Length: 180
Image 1: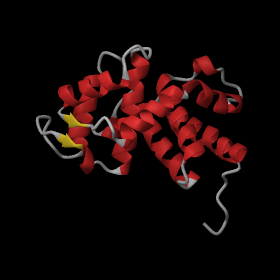
Image 2: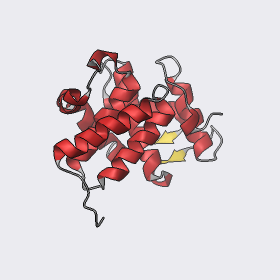
Image 3: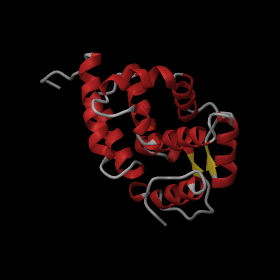
């Protein structure tokens, strides 16, 4: 089994197998044990949000989020409540995906939006949403996005993600004070 941080770029055909293997390995459980939502770390919650966003993107947003969560729960021995933070955040990001993309697109100097990989776009979209809506220290948000990129995006995409999000923090005026 691969660890969450060691996963390659996921493709539509293997996303389901990678999700269950990664979650089971990460939590030290066999693939037949149910993974309880309340046992997930904050990093696991972020990874699960990413998985839901990736699945929705893979299906061109034609599958409802509820259907995706139901499939994850039954197919992967997960226990993701429909009223959980994971589902609520994924739903908000999906609903606002175009506006979130427009927020960071101007910061893609020397890059065309259509050349940015799917995983990288999803990570940038997720981090942009989090920067806009939470009081979490921007350094933590950037660090978590970089970790997602190391695990799921193209080689060295984490450097790109770090640079774009650093610019976005400045654009949003969310730079932490020196005393933090």
